[in-house]
Amino acid sequence: GEDVEQSLFLSVREGDSSVINCTYTDSSSTYLYWYKQEPGAGLQLLTYIFSNMDMKQDQRLTVLLNKKDKHLSLRIADTQTGDSAIYFCAESGYSSASKIIFGSGTRLSIRP
Amino acid sequence: NAGVTQTPKFQVLKTGQSMTLQCAQDMNHNSMYWYRQDPGMGLRLIYYSASEGTTDKGEVPNGYNVSRLNKREFSLRLESAAPSQTSVYFCASSGGGQGLQETQYFGPGTRLLVL
Image (cartoon, rainbow over all chains, first blue to last red; front, side):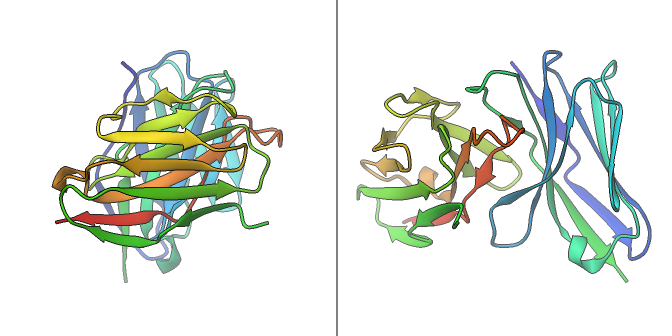
């Protein structure tokens, strides 16, 4: 079945760039997402990319999609302490009833 | 516009007790979802409702039932709670016609402890 995989942890120095990677198996994925979960809170959509795009930039966030390798990455420039959270990669198809498949999340910690 | 709300925020149950988790959304979304989140396992879909009046099983439906009471509300019931159901439960909704058909918006979660 469909699967989305991420590494569990990433530690980055404050001010550096963070790159969180994700791989997925469903070649028919239409939407690919990054969600952020802060401690004690629900998931919040951070950014998304359509499968016909290679890159999307939104302020400090850059999403790169390699559809051939089924690889998605999220780059956070100038990482701040407020970026500490769990980041979930997710994918879904086109149908309005499509289910989103989530990865297990990458916990990003920031060191001074 | 409160988005997705869930009650209760936290609950402790004894094995065998029953309870209903409530979820409501005010975004006029068609689809609603229940997930559970366990450490190191991400989110797993329990049940979903593609539209009012329909419900379907997700990845881990055993031990749960759901009701799509109306377009706004989608409840999750544990008939006889087990320790394995200790988890954080998230409700989500999608389909608001805002150009991101599949974006899901999440509630704050319900933390359930079954002793």
